Length: 405
Image 1: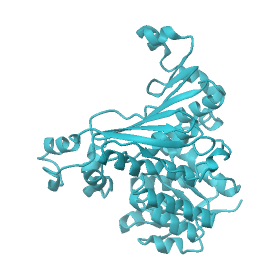
Image 2: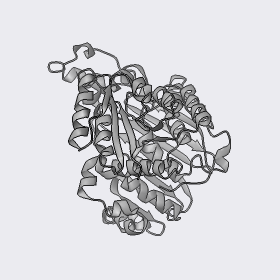
Image 3: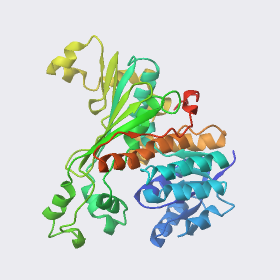
Image 4: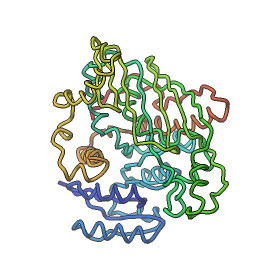
C-alpha cells in the first residue's frame, strides 16, 4: 500500500485535533506541518514523533509546504477566511486537498474554487465531519430506503454556546472574534446543512434555489462581557458592539419543492445541539430525542406519555440502516474526535485518494454549503430579501449520480 504523504496547515484546536485523527489512519504519513505560530508547529512535531513517525518539516509559511515534493495531500485547518486561497494554490500545485468547514467570504470566492477544480481536476473534499455522524448517517440511509416517504422539510442548527470562545479569541488566538464583531450572517452553516443536503440529493438530482435570512438583535456577547467586566482579560471588549445577531434563521427552498430551515444560535446560554429533523409523508425523525414517529402512531404526537415512550426509539433502526463503522465502533475511535465521526471521515477521505474514487463531499458540495454565509449576510443587510443561490454545477445537478456515504 502506497504511503500518502500529508501536510496539515493550521494547527489551532481544530487543526491539532485533525492531526491526531490523521495519525490514526493506516498508510498515512504526516510529512509537514504549518502554522503562523511557531509554538504550534513545535507541538505538532512532538505529536507526530510521539505517534512513531519521523519528525515532519515545519514552516510558518504555507507556500513552503505546498511547494514540497514529499507532500501529496494538504489538510487545511486555518482561519475560515483563508480556506479557499490556500485550497486553490494547493490544487494548482497538484496537491489533493482536504478543506475544513467554514462559511465563504463571498460568492465570488466560491466560483474561484469551482473554476480551479474544473481547470486542474485536482481532487478536493470538504471535511464536514457531521456528514459522518451517527444520527446523520442513520437518517440518510432511512431516507434512501423510503422510511420517511417523500421528504418535505428538514431542519438543522448549529446551537452551541460559544461566548467564552468568541470573547477570549485574542487570548486563545482564535479567529471567531473578528467575525462576530464585523459580520451578521449564518456564519457556520455546514454542520447542519451538509447532512441535510445529502438527504435531499443536492447537486445530484436536486438543487438549492433561494434563501431568506433573518437576524435577531445582538445582545448576548455584550451582556456576557459586561457581566464579567472584572475578570475579562480583553478590556477592549467592554462596551464594544457586536454586529452578529444572537439568532439567525435561514429558510432555503429547493428545486424539488422541499424547504430547509437553519438556525445559528451561539451567543446565548444553551446546551449543544444540531437539531436534525427530517419530516416526510410517512415519518418524522427528531434528532434532539433520537426518535422516529411513524404515520399511524398519532397517539404519540398528542399524548405526553406516548411521546416519552417513543424517545430514543431510533435505536431500533440502527442494525438495518447504520453503516458497519457505527455498529462496531471502538472506544478508541469514539475518543479520537467528536464521538467517532472524525476518524470515519478521514478514513473515507484517504480511501477515496488511495482507490482513485470521487470525493463524497466534493467541490460543488463545498461551495453550495459555504455560500450560504455570504448570501445570508446579503439577505439580512437588505431587509431579509430573498436571494438566489447560484447553480455551481452549471445545470449538471440534474444528471449527476448520487454517491454513498
